[in-house]
Length: 136
Image 1 (cartoon, rainbow, N blue to C red):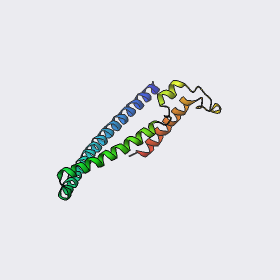
Image 2: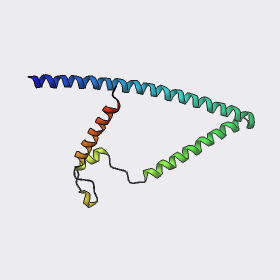
Image 3: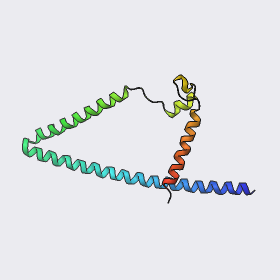
Image 4: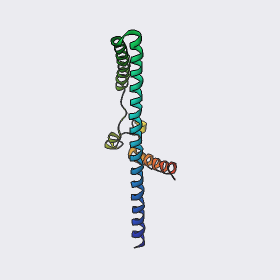
């Protein structure tokens, strides 16, 4: 009877802690979204000021063409970087690791046979570290 009461109290404490974590994460996400929108507005005004300044030097059509060309060059560079990283051998996802079940031993050049145990240890360590970092 006492163990049932203790487990119920522990479950209630865990539930309230999870609810608090969700509330804080939601609040943090809303603030970061608002900050991102304000940064986008600031960048938009900065680019419009650049176009207005360039329009005074070279004319409005040439100014917008220059800014468009700069954005195109930046986008092309990002696409080349993305395609270069996509050609590399992708690391396995967690779902692939769990589905594999640790088929190969580490001595055969594969992953360790206890992949699930390693993932559990990493998850537990992350929980403990996070618990100590976000204490009030």
